[in-house]
Image 1: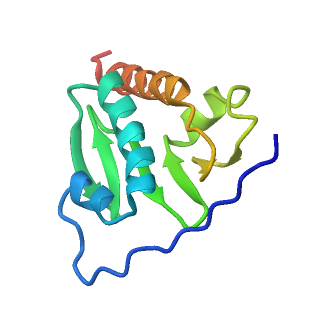
Image 2: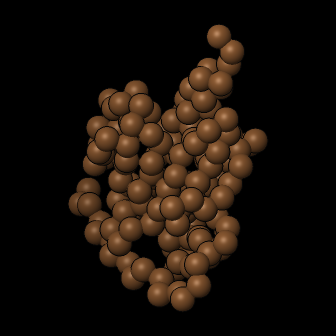
Image 3: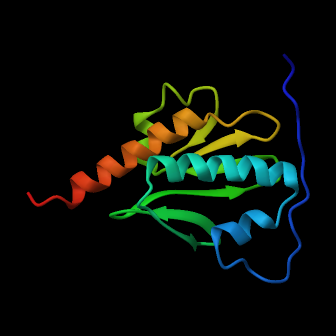
Length: 133
């Protein structure tokens, strides 16, 4: 199956979003659907996480940072920390990665089950780091 290339126009909004929902609402319905699916997967894995914008990106915190994500012109950047990228390197081999980032190309399904696993891992790592000991 040929890889579908999807290039989007980034929003030219003059106002910065104040919430994850406002961030997502700035994009086309197709992109909103992908970002909402990603957000739902994160929420399912970490229902107690605090949602906010940090560094201009949607961010989820629970006992510390869990993950960030951001829309780019040809991919969705997913930022689960360098430790998590390393821990899931084998499962992420189909995606372009860097030290702390994963690129999910537009026009391809986001691996939502893998996202949930990574977020659960981050919750566990944060909990362990916070535990007295």
